[in-house]
Length: 265
Ligand SMILES: [Fe+2]
Image (cartoon, rainbow, N blue to C red):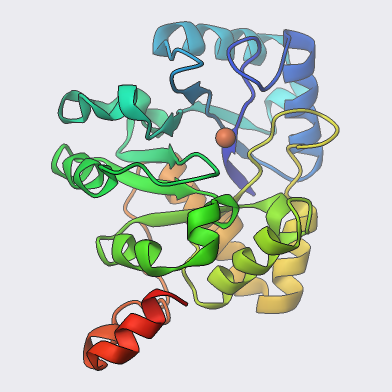
């Protein structure tokens, strides 16, 4: 499996506090069947993002891994880029320093409570500079939990979507679980990632979520969301073709009243 979202780098955000924990987190991921893992430190008003410093710490983690683990897992670097004011104000100048493995894909995170006013403009500008945004855990955002309208609009503009493994297994509560599965069933999800922060509560394990997805949606879907899609991102390749998302493009054929009802659903 390939994990695109992981707060692995020690001492830079609310994830791993020290080198020892980071090494244990890689070990836990490898033992769980993860072969590629992207370290994605927060980039927001609270946690400054320094790509060179993060790369250095990531190398320290690699160097500290037992050799049996080091050969099993490849570590990459990205960011958990928050769309808050400071980050978005100069978005036109953002280059690939925040993206996954210097490729075109960028994890973007909203706060759990709302959506920034300028988000549509920001997403447009990201596309203009060649970035492909991957929205992290929409199932945990209170606005998107209430209505799918905004997410539907972003998907029309080729936004990719990542849900958190722990949402699918119920660890983020009933509402996040229900919304995550609704998005899964509509084929609105492209990646399942751990968003790991520690070794006990928000762990780097993906296998339990893989298993429930496999049981509920079949092996092909599980492989696509946990392996094929995230591997393309890890390697900076174009995304493989995806199933048509339900209810995203058909909407134009409906009358205005249907669309309005759907918007608030
Ligand atoms: Fe995160």
